[in-house]
Length: 101
Image 1 (cartoon, rainbow, N blue to C red):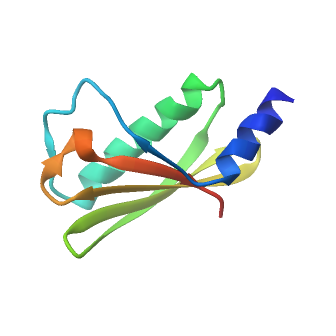
Image 2: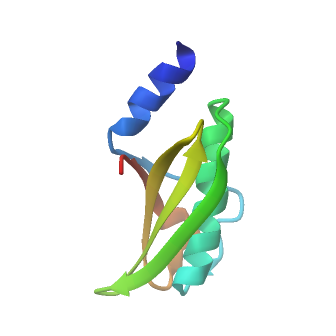
């Protein structure tokens, strides 16, 4: 039942500001954002006791905003995430959203 409630919450878009200890560095390209996105979203799921596996992602830039759309497998379901930051901005300003595919 707890897992069902967690998945239910993931169905809705949840935009979260992110706090981390390594926030002093800048993100200059989609590869850096992809790495950041993977680690932060995996930690998000782990904190909720959810096992996420099989990470896949693609990144792009549009209007000076870096974006990464990734997906995790969770209990045989694909859960999508979207990470965003202005090019050259500090990691502390990056955000991620859990979205339903």
